[in-house]
Length: 415
Image (cartoon, rainbow, N blue to C red; front, top):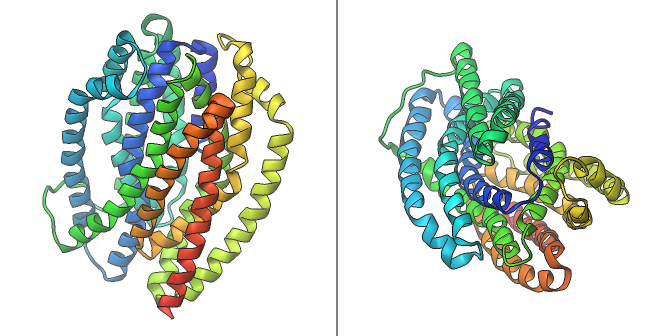
């Protein structure tokens, strides 16, 4: 529920800004920044949990471990931001169909919003630390504070600064969220926050394992960039249509997965490192998969039957052009058909994270990029912008089948 307000932001944007070339520019660069943020933050927030559980079991120094992660990652991310700020205009001229003014706007927006990458990494590490100790409340609620600040900043400055106010809003919101989590960590006495730019054996092992996870996230979220790049070759506004439909889809995904994935990773890590039993892990995986299968299929049926009504209620107001509403609805419908396999595949990913088998995730993600690129090209020629989410649904089914097969092999190898 903590993320619910965050998912309302795109719908406020649809009312305040509509579908324009400038919004295409913002959504495009936001996808890149979000991709880079997820590469680091999602990997850190998830993978740090089993490592902290293992260190805690052995009575190791949590403060030293987390300090090295924060310090080393901060340097790496700052260097990455500087490099990207230099090369992004050249890449856009080659890969997209945006005009010169739009490319210039995208470059400026990147400079304004790029520090968000570093902020999200810090908040994800603190969230992962709190989740590892089963202090779920503040990491869960903190996105709501971020969303409130973001919306206030955008509303106050939208008329004067246009799309730039969106970038500033996201930045301000994440700063507030970071300070909240830092205060909670310090008051909980979980560790002393101290940055170290150096490596030891445990840190090197963590980054080695994290690299596979990060590559998988690069590949998976590269699909988002691929989708929007493909959409840029369609009629103007297609990138925005794709973004609005994806945001509608993300609400149902987040509603099912966010709370469950965070808690099962912590509890599964506890149980696994207590007895190193993959049989127990497999049984827990089957139980949660059955529950999600029933719940997600039921939710999909309800949403598919009412997708036109929901799309209209969410978007049909303000600056949003009503003649584009059916395209958003159709695109969301195609996304929604992939809900069940997507959620189940994410549950399997948590099992592999507990086992620190992140290479499996990397291999699957690379395959999905290739499949997604091919299907995007084929299906967008048949269905237009709506063909892109349909390609994503086929990719979700492939990922689920792949993870199920590999996990069966893992069980056999442990036996």
